[in-house]
Length: 435
Image (tube, rainbow, N blue to C red):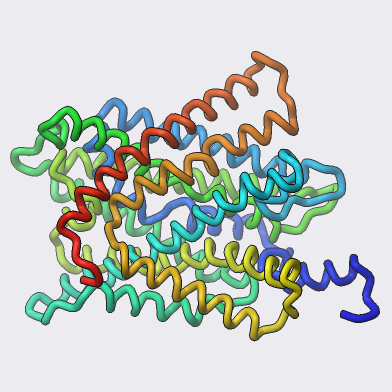
């Protein structure tokens, strides 16, 4: 680095970091990255969330979440180049522009990291459980194998894939993952229709007590918020698209986002409505568990889930690697070498694997994280930043839309963790470590 100017050193570091290394993405790359990031395996829990919410509130909250997060996605795409001549390549850079250097970091980084690490842990668990389900479905009389070992098998893939250099180099995996998410969602709702309404199906509340119903309702809000977790990687995805003053990156990015959100609607609405319609309040917290047959179809759907969560894990992990590596190189003054990357990325995969093996109460975690960290990142933080930077006129349509999303998001953030914590406590009673 000797003899180089500060700007040159910064450019070298940016060319090394995974988000800004490659800026030649096409608009359709942003489509699959966004589908892979947004459509999580959380969609498989939507019929269960519907059973806690009931028909009216369930459909309303699903639809409001879709509208609200589509709007906040548009805001983030617009704000990517909010300052002339500068691109906010990372969520925290936009936060710093809005809230100031120090405060912006403290508001955005902890939240963004909790979303990404939380998603990665949940995907470790989902990947492991889906592998176990494939094994158990195809092999009835085999000796049961612990979930722990399946999570380790799932993690072993990431010890290899995590060494891909940039977000653009994950594109092929991301494309496969996006196709898979549409495929297993389609399998889930088509199989629900094929099985038809189950005998003795009931659409009344799941719990027999008022407290159980109220907490269940709160927890379901978090499950739905978890389904819209992709905002913590929007700016990072947009950073990979080339941008010039004549052709800013927001054009192709918005095109990609529209396609992504149409696919999100095609995945979320049929699964939620038809899964609940078929099984009523006896639906499992993963719809594929309720659909016992045909066996080959359920095994196929679970294979698709595994491929999808491999891609999703990588999209979120690349952004974590970028944060960790820029901290190590810029603040801790490490040299940007392959060895630093090798160590830091393997440590991260091991950490998410260890936490996934230790705490696999999947349902409760979904609701808790969904409310606590995804609601701010996806529902209302973009609106607050928009109000600060763009300053819409009071009582204008934009002003009302932002405040509506802020109130809705804050409500989710307060209520969802309450319900989810109770669920975790109830599940933890009969829980064995490393089972």
